[in-house]
Image (cartoon, rainbow, N blue to C red; front, side, top):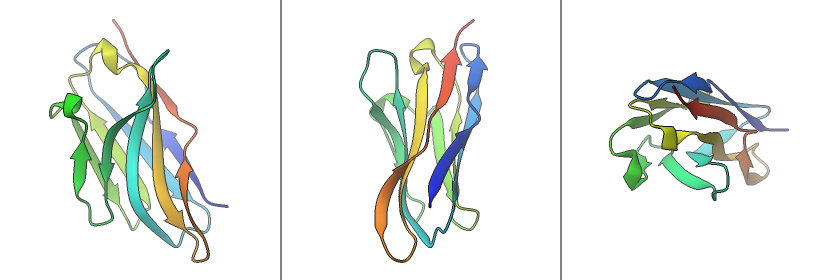
Length: 119
């Protein structure tokens, strides 16, 4: 059974930085596109950034250069480096990836990690 596990969330002051990590485990044969989403209270889940299998990133317009997405295909991990955090960045952050075990290919989601930006 393949799964994704996020880590690195927590409480940070406005203007601060935080790095989120996502690790794939199980019988993972290959990982295709990966992405970070977030969902704030009372709002819909939205894309933060994605990165394809070649490592090319794409960001939501509102990121404005504050976040950096990266991946390590060998270690089967993905990170999101966040800086200049604002209170509006408070949300549960989810990682997602399209993965295959060599037999079936599906989208997987992590359980989410809470990021709270507050003084």
